Every structure is written in C-alpha cells, then in structure tokens.
Amino acid sequence: MKNLLIALLICIGIAAQAAKPVPSDPKATAETIKLYQKMLKLQSKGMMFGHQDDLPYGTTWYDVEGRSDVREVCGDYPAIFGWELGHLELDHAYSIDSVKFSKISAWIKQMDQQGAINTISWHFHNPLTGGTAWDTSSKKTVAAMLPGGEKNKLYNQYLDKLATFMLGLKDNKGNYIPILFRPFHEHTGSWFWWGKDLCTVAEYKALWRYTVTYLRDTKNIHHLLYTYSTGSISTPEEYLERYPGDDLIDILAFDSYDGAKDFTTSLANNCKIVSKLGAEKGKISAVSEVGGHIAKNPQWWTNVLLETLRPYNMSYALVWRNAYKSTKEIAYAPEKGAVSAEDFVKFYNDPKTLFLKDIK
Ligand code: BMA
Image (cartoon, rainbow, N blue to C red; front, side, top):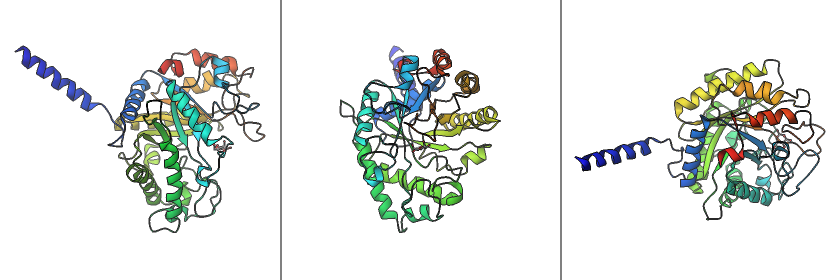
C-alpha cells in the first residue's frame, strides 16, 4: 500500500513537471526553460521594470563604469535590461546608439550574473535598399530576403553575424545566457521597412519563420525567447493578424508611448487584450516599450503608468533610453534631481513593481 502511494505521488510529480509551460523551441536550454517558467511565475506576483541602455549612458554621461540613472534614483537596478544591435549587420564596432558591441556582451554577462534579464531589439538596415530600418521606400524588401529572393544571401550573412553575437553570450559556467529576442517590432505601423504597408501578412509571417528556423535549426541557437511586439492595437484580431505562430513565439508584447489624449484607455485596452491572449496560450505577456513625458507630468510613474497597469498581469514594462546629448529625444527613465524622481521612488516602493533585488 505504502509503495503504491509512493508510486502514485511520483506519477503526480512527473505529471506536474510535464504540465509546466515550456518555450517554443523544443531544444531550449535548461537556463532558458528556467527563465521562461520564472517569468511566468513572477508575472502573477508583480511587474518587472525594464530600461533600454541603462548602463551605457544617460542624457549627460557616457560610459561611466557603475553608473545607472535608475539606480541613482531608487537605489536598485532595473530587473530587465534592454539592448540594441542595430549596425551589427554592417560589421560596425559600435551600435546604432553608439554603444560598443563588445561592451554590450560584457554588460549582458555582468547583469545576468546578478540575476537580471536581458532583452535585445534590432533596428537593422534595409537589406534591399541599403537604407536604415526607417527606409520604407520599397515594398519588396521582405520578399527579397526570403528564399529565392535577391537579398536572401545577404540576409543570411546578417543572421550569421547575429548568431555569432548570440553564441558569444555565455556565463561563467559556460552556459548560454537566455535572451528575450525582439526583432521586427511595431510592425502594425509602417515606419520600419518590415511594417504593415511594406509587406503582406504572409511575407511578414514567413520572415519570422525563416528567421527563427535559421537561428534555431541552422545555427543551433537555443537560448532565445522570441518576443512578438506590435505597436498599440485596438482588437485581438488586429494583434494576431501578423502573429507568426505559437511554435515560434514565447512572449506576447506591444509598444506604446504616451502622446495621445486617450493614452491610459488605450494602454489598458492593450494590456487587457495581450494578457488575455498570453494566458490563453500559456505564454508571457509584456509591455516591451513604453514611455511618457515625465518632465511635463512629474506624477506619470504612479498616476499614469502604475495605476493603468496595476490590474493586469504583465511580466514587465520597459521604458526607452535616456539618449545621450539628444536634441530630438526626451529621457524616458528617471534621472537624479529630475522633477519626476520623487514619484519614481514611489513607483519603485509600490509592491506591484519588481526591480533587480525583487527577482534574484
Ligand atoms: C529609436 C530611437 C533612436 C534609436 C533607435 C534604436 O526609438 O531611440 O534614436 O536609434 O530607437 O535604439
């Protein structure tokens, strides 16, 4: 009887283990599976805070060892670190945002060791025209990158460079560091060459499938969690129109910036749609980019962002970069002494938000 009971308990244990959600890549590394399950679990506890290029620069400083605007304001690092690989495809030493790729790798390793999570975006050049990610002059780019297309070989070369970078991301034990990889984002708009008016639904989906298959099966990369990230949308149908498939995607996300009058209503609606779809699919949901005019609205962190996101189980919300000496872009993260700094501390202290110390 006792043996039977033990056997039963073991079976239940195995079944529970098997029922745990896993990433889309059947060969995902143990660390990647662990991160995926950790993020799903954390999602019901709170919302992680992320910041793009937190360590490389702030609006007035550039590459100062140990500096982080977020930590200088609240005493803790973000839980999620965003990085950008634009210009890696051109063999440049520095990214589109003037950060050395070798330093990006080093920072990813450093923050991974401290328990943080890293996400990567890629505003890469238009392989057909040779223009930037914002070059929307041709509707033929995506088709040209696919097998049989005139730029397929060039795209493979871009992916080879990306693969080399990803395969260089190993921790001290020699294990690959899991990365949330977020290419072809904001495709529901038409400001990037992969945007809605620049390629068909089938071409966009094929680009995703080709890219994941190439990285996963040809390059044998199994430490990526693929993030599908639309712009702001209004309906689940709109969100899913170009969704490449459950077998390719791990994180359902969207980007949305505070600009329009109905921002909070639209942000809430996006969270509602994306978190519901995420829950149905057993996948992670996130706000992959967000930002507001924190200088004009010093209570933005609590009144706008926190209170709007509070009812939803979003894994994280990442604010964009504090561009160094920019005349065009505002700072999206808090800065020491800025008018929104005090409010950010309230945001930080709220039990809903999770920073590095909360997720270790
Ligand atoms: C955009 C802007 C650009 C930047 C790009 C890639 O939103 O911040 O200045 O080069 O992201 O990070």
